[in-house]
Image (cartoon, rainbow, N blue to C red):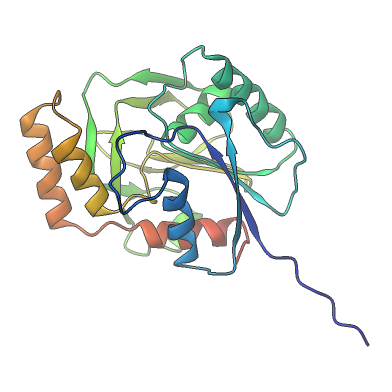
Length: 243
């Protein structure tokens, strides 16, 4: 009797920035940060990278694969052609119940595409590790203490959720730390793929125009708390039944 081969699970990375000049020598690329994060949880995962800024988007969609929209220095409300194309792609994908996740800019552009609103936050720059209260029952099963601690680096925020979205976590600085729509769309404002070392590198070497008090408080938060990026990676894989 023949043995049926199990299909290896795959994550498609929709790369929305390469962050030229920001990455330290030990990080070969922004996409590599996502590969390292997920492979620390499941070494059998496969990956494919799509340079969205160059107008490359996945055309042949697979329902058992995950499509991940990364962070970016761009804003979801910009009218760059590649962002407008991505927004239309998100609308098409959402209508097919394809597995879709957004991180930071990805979180924001999914909200923007599906009827939400994204704005520059008047409260300033979100940086360092932030603790949020988990409000979604599904996520609470994986974080039994009801708290989420992630690294952040953003000026924009989702101010209005798209129809049907359920907030998964919130805090005083950011009302919508992430959301889900059904069981096929999941987003995070934070950066689970970041490491504390990388965040410190950004603060110390690439934030000359930012408020010194904000930077100092961010450094203190990194010293005080542990970043839960790996736990979030495990949650993502479980949420989408990829492990």
